[in-house]
Length: 122
Image (cartoon, rainbow, N blue to C red; front, side, top):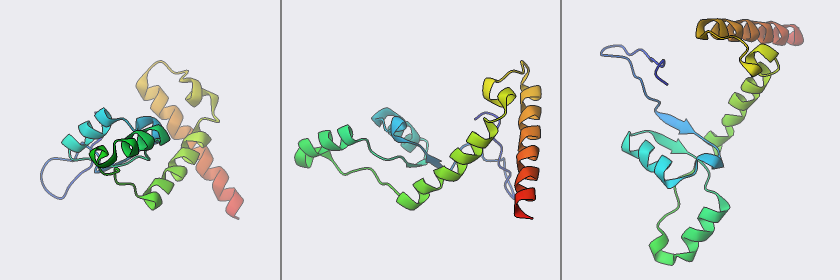
């Protein structure tokens, strides 16, 4: 996350995301509270056991956390892109020792995927 820099028209670049999409594994109160404290909106589905515990507490269980189903479906696009990258052994195993070489490997894999997808269209 330290390498993220989103330029703005004026002022210093943004370094934290505006919104985070996560799976049920990240549905923990501490994670939600930390992101809320930093002003990062979140779309994480609530686990079944958390729903049950919240409902068992009745009125004291609080409201369910907000969940945008359409935005959560966008995760599928990212997951498929990462899975395509992991088809390349050097990316999946992180064979390269240096970060710049690993990033170059990801760039080459991305270009190969892009060229392969272009040939499918035509």
